[in-house]
Length: 242
Image 1 (tube, rainbow, N blue to C red):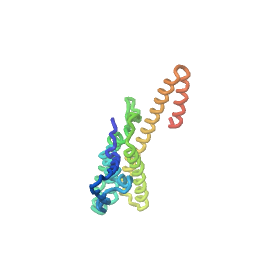
Image 2: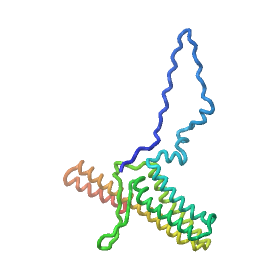
Image 3: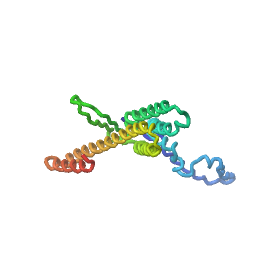
Image 4: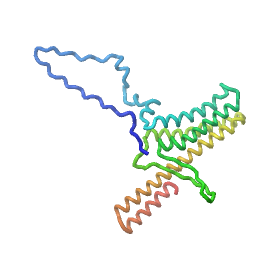
């Protein structure tokens, strides 16, 4: 899977033209000062042009995937908070929130995570009935877009925290009818957070081991290279908790 370059490129200003020396007998034209309207349409600093939500989507390599990641999560939590203002039907509100949570869970695990940070995970059951985690990661030589990666991890950890706050509020207000919805939201969000955290750790672990093996074996062949490779692998394993 390839990572496209950001859509917004830095545009270098044109080089100022050197005024030619006026010849005799010709009148020179005074430079025309820009109007206030023209100055107001340009950003005063490069940061102004890149700030805000629009700037984030311009710098994103996959703006549609980033938009879907946030729209499902925001829609689910907003519907849960505001459903009482628009309808008194508890069943309708519950169904809408559960559907949004399921769509977010599937999109985050199968689409957004794979597209934005190059990670994917799932749980697999073998023939003996034993379940285990399976992790996939993109080639580290093709890193993710920094904006996509940052916004993905923010969404992954911020929204479970928000749902945890809503769970505490529901308990304090004794609004027990909505507790199952919040519990389901916590299960979906925490599962994705844990899964992608382990997938990211597994990817870094395998990349470090492969880099250590290739580097040491190439630089120091034979028995000495094998010893150093083993030392590096053990050190990497301690760092990443293997």
